[in-house]
Image (cartoon, rainbow, N blue to C red; front, side, top):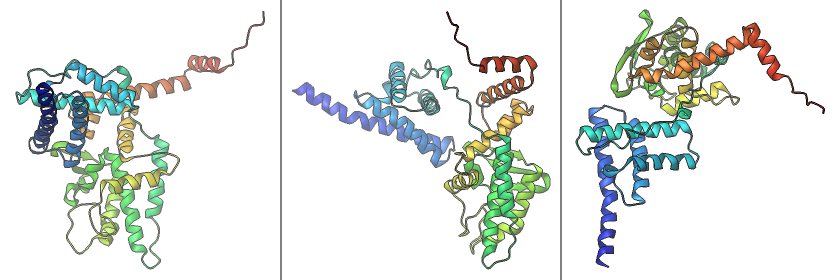
Length: 337
């Protein structure tokens, strides 16, 4: 009886220990790493999900083993979690246990021998160049709508804003959080560039093409003044009420512009920017600097994208590849005995 009471008391204290560890990790991410609140919360959710799995057997994050990590990933896979999400959660746990090691809270990292299977290396989804062109042409046409009716000034301003956002997402490969936090003073359109603050408040210079510069110039000249409210707003993109746009608003803009036939997202435009650059011969180091990737390994996924593009071109234009493709597409005739 006494032993069971002791075990019950221990089980009650273990979850509190996990919660305290996650809370300390959140403080590290916010203060030392300088990550945005939304990013910190996403990391915390992934760690808490692993902690919940451990707590089913009254275990702690500080005493987790490699088998615990593998079991957690297997549990996710059995419950239909997609490969990209599982890989992200594993990456989060890698970072969490590296922090515990550096802080001398543990002596061994249980994730160090756990690797993502090759099947998890999913190519990022992107839009075709023709799809991007259609989206941008559509928003450009809306932005050229003449201001002839009462109250249409704000309608045109919103159209100019939406077109400028899409041009910026595609031209610079920006994250949606980078777009909504961009300030007017961060634009240097005379030099065709913008100062962008990425993850961890790291700054980078993003070059802008002619189309993006023209769209942003028109938005600043005719669009933003019509949206600007009584209070001074330093942020570049404003809502109809003169407030800073939210990330959800940008998601809605992209989805609405893409139409119901394709589930597009701001991140898909970022991937499209990188994919199309690599397909046209850009080197990975350039793409890495443009996207703001801390590690070149993150950018290397686009080499697979370039290879897939090369294969498609080869099959379409090489005479023997075309013959092979045609032969493979012909129905196989059954042999009559």
